[in-house]
Image: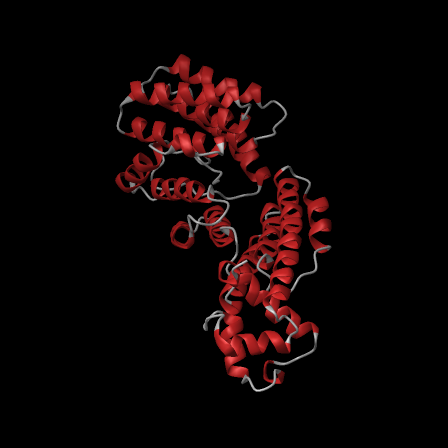
Amino acid sequence: MDHRNNENLVRYIIRKVRKERGLRQGDLGNISAAVISLLESGKAPLEGETFEYMLKQLDLYPKEKLETAVEKEQEKMRELNLILQCIEAALDKGSHEVALKQLKKIKIEKFHPLAPSVYYLEGRYHYLKNDWNKSSKIFHHALDLVDKNNIAPPVNVLSYCYKDLSNGCFYQNDLQNALMYVNQGIEAFDKNKGRKEVIYRLYANKIQYLMKLSQHDHAAQILNDTWLDRSKIENISVVLNLYQFRAAIFRGREDFEKAIAICNEGIEIAVRYRIKKRHLDLLNILGTVYLKQTIYDKALQCFQIVLWMDEDNEYRRRKIDSLSNIGTLFINQTNWEQADDYLNKALKMGREVGRHLPIGKGTDYPWELFLFSTPT
């Protein structure tokens, strides 16, 4: 085994063994603390007489001993990574407390290659509990760990941290910082690391933020590039986001035929994969396309389908979209009593949801408060 292929893990092992033995950086024989620091931090190559001398001091020489240590740590990392994947799945399924309980059982050093992933999931827990301040601090802590300890995570956890930081800003109507974080996430992305799908989530979010900021041409440019790669995107929910944005852009250009075709194609995919949330989103967009054409019967039908499909209020923000859009429809028909009724229902449910989502300058209707309200 060539340790140069596992340099980050070797650096971790060296630091771990030194600390387990209670040794400071200046306690390794004739090697200065400064040199040890350079070797452990990745600022000096793991080769030469000095490196071999250090391995001997740590009982990791001959190199077969180091190779054995690397193999053991690789196996431990595979086991830990499996646990982290299961914790993330539990979080995404809504089993938040179960996930947190398992997360607290993990005891690793702050310089461990997977430490940023552990902190990301802790931040994700608080993010899903709508505690933006706490989640933001933890995401930043994960980012600081990487910088401070010169960690090279095996997956794109930095991009995931930036993605959720951008989402948190979006929900607080801070679109400029949302855009800043999403750009940092794109910049941090490494195509050679695991969890590559995050790049498409970031692009989808960036498109959404640009549309909210009325930067439609820039959004369309990114969407056109990402649209060509949609067959490569494993996450169908992200693919359906692209359908939403594409339909909305065609709607804005009054290319209604294309907007309707995109909506119908997206709805077919949502039904096939049973992704109800995106199904409702696309129905709402389709309804607004008809509304913009003043085809009121078809528009009303789309919005009413959303209302009865989500009778149990599982996706209330989609329901708010429909209620507010029906209100807009009745305003257009000068049916003030009905308009007032539906808009009040939308506002009441909006207060119950508890998130003040950005209206944005790019909305087509005065009551289109929650359209595209869930970043990926």
